[in-house]
Length: 153
Image 1 (cartoon, rainbow, N blue to C red):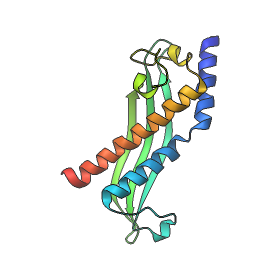
Image 2: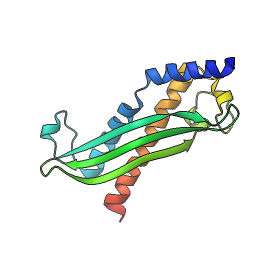
Image 3: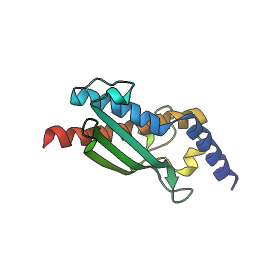
Image 4: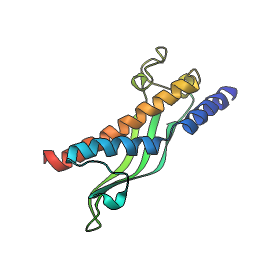
């Protein structure tokens, strides 16, 4: 189908512009440092803790042209105490989030959920904005897990 090829092209173009793993890592590093009371440093050798974010796979997927789409992220996040070289916290990323209009605020014509068909109506810039929002959402979710594990229990 021509529409599928067009949608795939726009998605691939946007994915080339957005470094989702880097965005997740940077946002999570900043928010986690504030949560734990540490100051981020550029040199890991000077750090008391290292937040290791390893994202193996991510993307927007749909089971069919008319089906709802999902943002899928797979990977691991570890908080490592550098002095003892031990993992003090670990979270598995295995998220499958329904993509809806809240991630693509610039486009008012989407409806409640994003399908592969509606993805075809978005510009590369709209998809780029949505990927940025989805990366922020992922970082926020992991941050909430860290906060819960360290402070709410």
